[in-house]
Length: 169
Image (cartoon, rainbow, N blue to C red; front, side, top):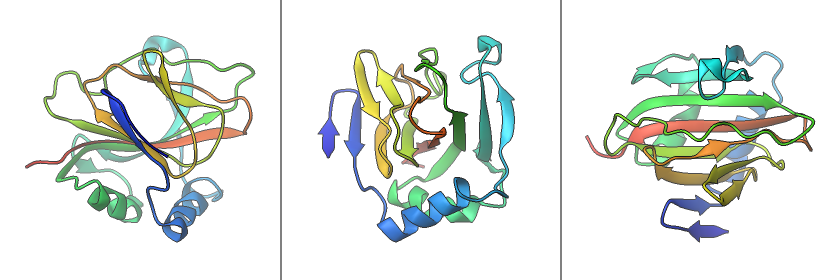
């Protein structure tokens, strides 16, 4: 599936299957991959939580696993990574939405990419439009666009890679 809207682009089978499976084995099926409990999914005061592995924070590499993700950054033609993190949300009894937000509302021309690392009934939403979590699918959009995410109810976890980057220097 390839979908283009005014707000976002969706590309299925974004990565070569063998490389994608290596990423899944690293971040989902590896009991030793470090995740950290974060209070707040969008904002600290939102009374939700998720588990996160921060690869890049404010342009600085923050993880020993960074090199495993370089092929993705290269495929995106990312010149500078502002933030990259893996979010893991446990299953919930009902689909719960995060508050709509902008990743970087104070930064011009920042791009956003969400790579879905597993298939589940969770989604990213842009107003009324939804992009469902299908493994190896990406949704690409401007980081200044209002969007949100959700939990899932049909899988143990929902895992996404969220990247904010610049494609120009």
